[in-house]
Image (tube, rainbow, N blue to C red; front, top):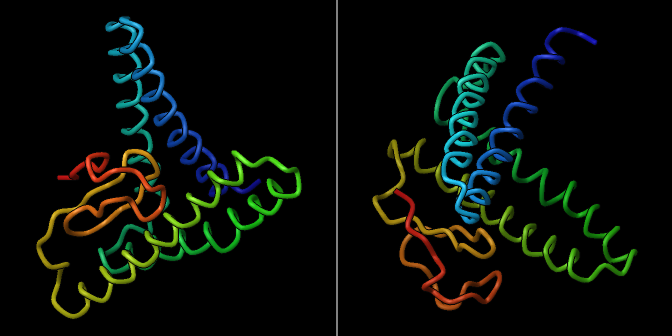
Length: 166
């Protein structure tokens, strides 16, 4: 295996581990193990340092417009290929809870694609998106610019379930 491929694998592994450790931290907090939670957060922060160093060596973080284009490409592949195939398998296996989850995820990934496309157009035309709040549904991840809808168009959750992102 080429060294660049190993670097990509390391980047993916460190990224995944960081997110897992943040989830573990939340569980430890919920169970009252605050120092363990702190340790998980500290190691997650360390993993982020590794991710950033590996990303710098991999390159590809050139401009916001380039990053938006790459992000849109990633999101498009997720909803058109990865999750579409995964959903088909879940339906064939008659796994309704998984199929419902994957359908919602696909819709959110499609939204992300559209948001990135819109942002890319704005960056090219005016330098940035117009000023507005950004909200994320805490239930399904639906992401909206502006005021949150009621109900969430993806999962039907209430407006109160949206969190503002700063």
